[in-house]
Image 1 (spheres, one colour):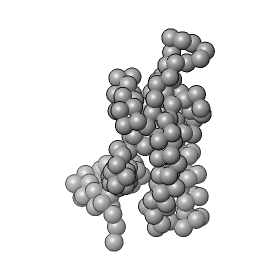
Image 2 (image 1 turned 120 degrees about the vertical axis):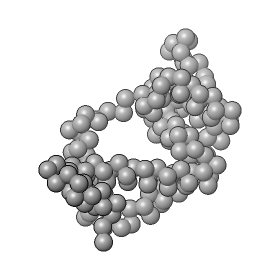
Image 3 (image 1 turned 90 degrees about the vertical axis):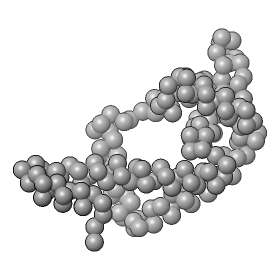
Image 4 (image 1 turned 45 degrees about the vertical axis):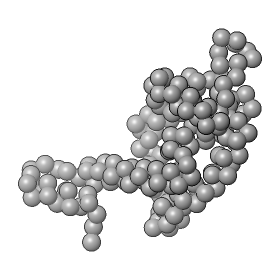
Length: 166
C-alpha cells in the first residue's frame, strides 16, 4: 500500500533520480497530515458552532488566563497572529458573549480579556469532547508508537526553536 507521499517521492525518483528526496518522507507527511488534521478539527468545531481559532482563544484563556484574563498582547503571542487579527477575534468572541474586556488593575491603560461565565462553561464542556476526537484521530497508533512519535516531534520542535508559547 502506501500513502500520498510515497506516490510523490516515487514520481520524483522517476523524474529526477539524481535528487535525494528523502526529506519529503518526513516534511511532506507532516505538512499533509497538518492539513488533514486541520480539516477534521474544523469540522468538529463547526459541529459545535465554533471556528477552530475560537476554540484556540477560549482554550488559551481557560488554561492561562485565570480570573483576571490575559492582555491582548499575551493572547496575540499565544495565537501567533497579527495584532489586528487578535483584536478582530476578541471582538467576534465578545459579540458572542464568550469573552469580555476588563480594565487591568495594575495598569489602567491596559485591557485584559477574560472568559465570561458562558465562555468558561463552553470550553469546559467542549474540552473533553475535543480530546476524545483527538484520541479518535490517533487510534491507528498504539501507546508505544505515540510515545515515540511524541519524543521525535518534541526533539524536532526544540531543534527548530519552538520552545515557548510566545
